[in-house]
Image (cartoon, rainbow, N blue to C red; front, side, top):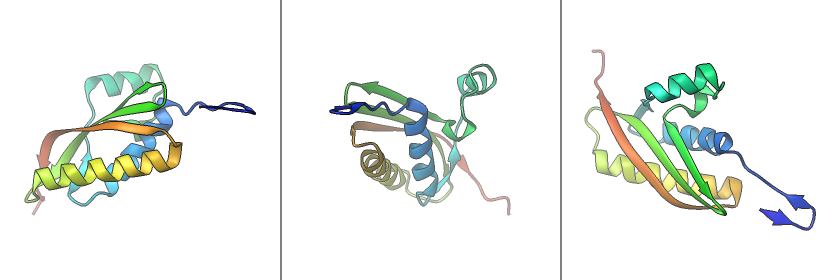
Amino acid sequence: MNNEYGNIKVTDETIAICAAKVALETQGVFSLASAITDTISENILRKSPEARGVKIYQNEDKIVIDLSVIINYGVKIPSVAWNIQENVKREVEAMTGLEVNFVNIYVQGIHFDDN
């Protein structure tokens, strides 16, 4: 973003941390799922563990967010995914002032209660 004072750049990691926090606060989400690339990124690139399971793609003033999640057993997966999409889109747009084009949800697993 440009204004009369200069440029503003919101990093992918900042967006990812915001998206992760909002996704985890959505009812029915147990956790974010991390891939082997997330582990490598943490160890080599010092990527924040809070951004695990989130991938960000920015193009000018538009954003695409990919979230990999673990859902609690017994919830309606499409409803939870829809809620994640709405919540993440709203919060990231409010925080960054950028337009979120897509929030893609990848359900990587189901969490069963330990009982």
